[in-house]
Amino acid sequence: MNWWKRLKGRLKLEEPLKRHTTLRTGGPVRFFIQPADTQDLKLLITSAKRYKIPLSVIGAGSNILAGDKRLRRMAVSLSSPFFKEIAFKGNLVEAGSGLMLAKLVSETAKRGLSGAEFLSGIPGTLGGALVMNAGAWGSQISKRVMKIRVMDSRGRIKNLAREKIDFAYRKSNLEKFIILGATLKFFRREKRKIRQDIERYRRQRQLLQDRSFPSAGCIFRNPPGDHAGRLIDLCGLKGRGFGGARISSKHANFILNRKNGRAADILKLMKLIKKEVKDNFKINLQPEIKIWQ
Image (cartoon, rainbow, N blue to C red):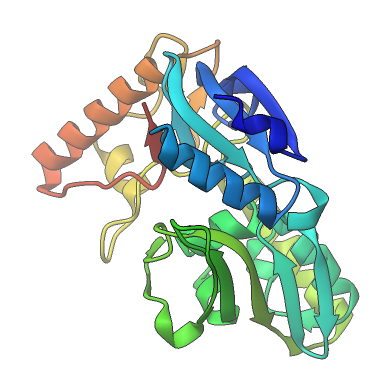
């Protein structure tokens, strides 16, 4: 099994995932790979199938809770320059899936293109934002999408028009694909006003969210017509913890890794939260993060 010898990108064996997740949890993964281009990526897909190795894409690791034990899987990071390219044509932006959202926000703002401001402060990549239909302050990234370039499970590259994609609250039907990039449409606006909105959103995040320790942001999706943080707070769970993990005293939908907490500690807290909210409000909270075990 020496398929990796044909890779142009980087390969690490038994790489601890805690180095690549914002929650700072995760045991060693069998293969951690940064493909150089789509040819490398196709090789990974075919090799994963041939040798029956689960393949998962990891972006900025900001929405992943990785288990403590060794994971027999292939973690693919689209962080090479090939997947971070960005190009402008009028109001259209073509960007790679590995592009950080902060870069997208700053580059569009420089050119007087508006529509990405709400993404300010979200620590993720474009690919992850598209799969999860990232949103804030009443906006969602799906509103900017014209088309998305993907690779399917057979290594074929396709272009999906916006009307062929099912976007919903914090989810889409894109999970069966690997996102390569997207064409996004923005609109012209005064640079000064764009910068003002970016700064306003940044201050609001600082005020409302807890970034004092490693976290994955909001752990649960908001149920229809309500906020998960409000329900968790009403259950009196702020500050509760197991091991090194604690529910934030500032934002109840944040779980913080305060003292080298394990994934097991965080999962216990998630179970407690779900039970208390279910018992008190008859609501089944759904995780916003992905759990790798």
